Amino acid sequence: MFFAQVETIRNLAQQGSCIIVGRGANRILRDHEGVLNVFIYAEREIRLRRVAEIYHVPEGQAEKVLNAADKNRASYIKHYTNQVFGKAENYHLCIDSGKIGIEDSVRVIEAVYRTLFK
Image 1 (cartoon, helix red, strand yellow):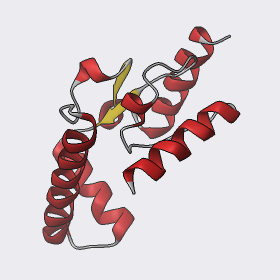
Image 2 (image 1 turned 60 degrees about the vertical axis):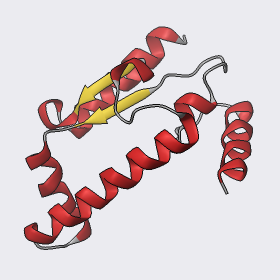
Image 3 (image 1 turned 120 degrees about the vertical axis):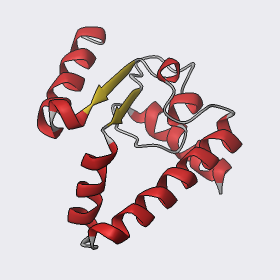
């Protein structure tokens, strides 16, 4: 499955601009021109509220959902890319969406991308 994802990610990047969320794309496309690797994070309490809102689960269950998702992400990234999940040096840009907000985070990413790849 991972190798099919790698092929798909590389094919999409060859076709032109695209946004790929997760799947170790920062590592897969490390030698590809025109790539901006972004890690978006937020404080745990903010993430818990977002999980409860997005997945319509009670706050008590949101903790369980978030813990499982974080564990799965960290395990996937370690296994397939040998990186530590969320480590700043694996990305060009890290943004705290809890502080900046989601829409302003998008604006920051757009501005950085346009500056780097005019």
